[in-house]
Length: 100
Image (tube, rainbow, N blue to C red; front, top):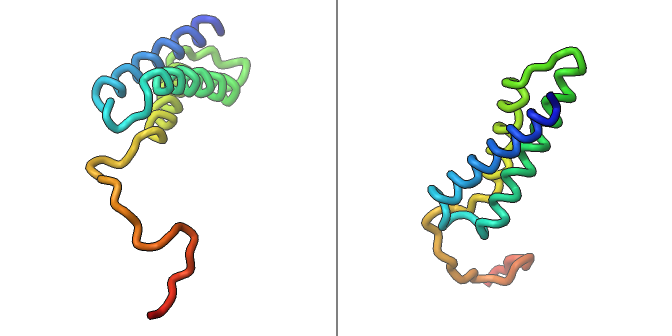
């Protein structure tokens, strides 16, 4: 059962990451990093959900949902802001503003 949960979560994370690359490719880093992050997030989410439910609860659906949710959170952290151009800063980073 644990193998099915791991494989299902990995495939679900891969599908979610693939959809994110396809839909939001310009706002994400390299596709390889996105795909790896999606799978790793889903596997961690499945592990976390399986551990939280405990040994007596063999609920495949809940484990897959937990994996998909954590994968979506990880993928959302990779998004860059849309429509922003790099504008030059008027002061150097970490500088103290002066009056004058």
